[in-house]
Structure formats: C-alpha cells, structure tokens
Image (cartoon, rainbow, N blue to C red):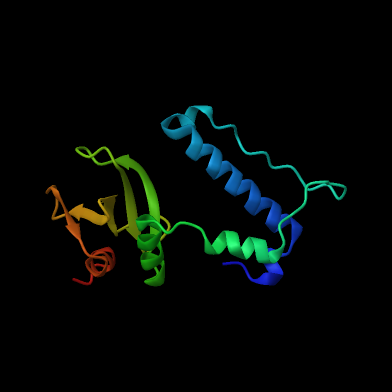
Length: 147
C-alpha cells in the first residue's frame, strides 16, 4: 500500500493507473496478450495534461480492492523470511508451468526450484525426483537449507 503522501503524487498516480490499464488490457486479450499487448509507453508527465489523476483516496481504494493471488501470498511469505522469489525462465517438464527460484541471494545460488499449481507450492522431493506439494514453512526451510 502507498502512503497518502506518496499516492497523492501525480507521477505515482499516473504510473499506477498506467499499470492497471496495462493489466486490464492483458486480461481482456487472454492467452494472446503476449503477442497483442502493446509495449508500455514511458513518457514524462506534461504539466498541461488534461487527464485527471485519481485522488489519494481513489488510489487507496484501487489498492485495497486489488486481487490477492496465491502467488502473491507465496511471494510475501518468502519475502517475510528474507527470501527472493525469482522467475527462473524454465518450466516444469510435466505440468509446463513456470518454475521459480526461491533463494537467499540474487545470484540464485542454493535455494529451491518450485512451481505453483492448485494453490500449492510444488518442489522436488529430492535430487532428480518428482515434485510434490510442500507447505510454506517447509519451503522456507528447504530454501535456507535448515531442515
């Protein structure tokens, strides 16, 4: 959430609105969004812009109404334990879902690879073994190697 002071800044409100517009466009395009979604424009705000910016109260309402996803819960949980949740650029062989690296450092050394499905975190049971659902606490323990 943004503080009222930050949310009332025109550039922040503009950026937030632009981001929401981009998300709404991507949602309406469905699976073709990757191909059809135009690149975002990073233009400076003009002082004579006739586009009204949302007030801080409107911005707070937008933030409060944002959808909570399982991925955001996992990311927040990892962050609360000083872990990074990083897209690995790979996919799980069977499910074809994206794999994420949960690690203590930016280089991604150590940590574990997981994917998210059916509101569960899936991680390899062991070296070269099949993936199984694990709890968030186990995810943290395995990512920090404190089993």
